[in-house]
Length: 164
Image (cartoon, rainbow, N blue to C red; front, top):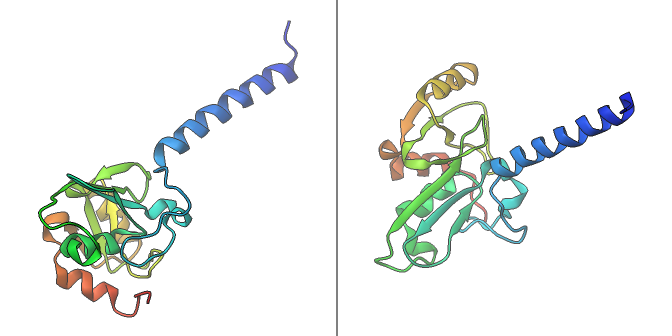
C-alpha cells in the first residue's frame, strides 16, 4: 500500500514530465551560438521571440523577432541568401501560447506598449480575436496580416534600434 508521500512524489514526477513536455513543444530548439541573421544577437536568449525562415535550399535563418525577420524577408540577398532560392516556410511564435505558427496566417499588432529584444516589434497572434484583445490591453495602434506588412512599416519600427 502506497503512503501519501509516495503518492504525492509520483504525482509530482508525472506533473513535472507533462509540464516539461509542454514547454519543450512550445519552444524552438535553437543552439545557443545561433545569431540573428540581421542584427547578430544570440536568438536563444529570447526564446519567446525566435522566428525562422526556411528557403527551398540552404540553411534555416533565425531572427530575434518578427521585425528583423521582415527586414530579411524583403531583402534576403542583403543577408547572404542566394538569388532565386525561394522562401518556403516562415515560422514564429504566438505571443500568448508561444506555439509555432505559420507567419502568413498570423495577425500582428503594432504600436503597443510591449517591446521585443530590439525595441518596437510586430507582436504575432494566431487569431484576430487574440490580436484585438491584446491591442486593447496594450494600446496597440494597428493590426496587420502578413501580406499587409510592407518595407515602410518595417523601416519605421527600426528607427533607432539597429545594432552595428
